[in-house]
Length: 151
Ligand code: ADP
Image (tube, rainbow, N blue to C red; front, side, top):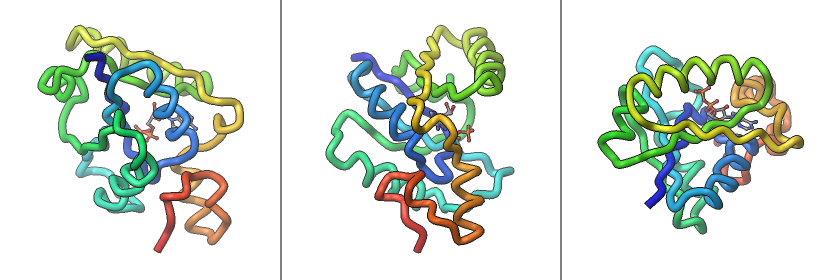
């Protein structure tokens, strides 16, 4: 069973994440969308809200699982028999950042990181821009799946 983890904060899930997960489903038998818990970080959406957004967006996709985890991504992989880490690349800055993480992870465990280049029409979207639009009462609905709505 080829299992991949797609780790991130997903604060909130965007159309960019959605695109990567959808494409990951064609490559792997199971894609585990894993929300990393970082107690130092302040989030706009609670863990429960972030998990629900993802579950609702993929309710008709049985190959997508949603979990939260603490600690190192590679430790989660080793414990759960996950052999691949899936990441999206938007631009050179993402590449530099991701390269360092992928090399570090390879030092820690024999797990491959698989990169997918973003779809051109979602490459500019980031969770931080979405949060900014929400904070300033803009129309964020074009940037996120339908399941992501502010109460
Ligand atoms: P983090 O909080 O670790 O930055 P994110 O939740 O923002 O995590 O992102 C998780 C993953 O989704 C990363 O691999 C990131 O590159 C990817 N990603 C974020 N936005 C996009 C996008 N617009 N298109 C494709 N991939 C994206």
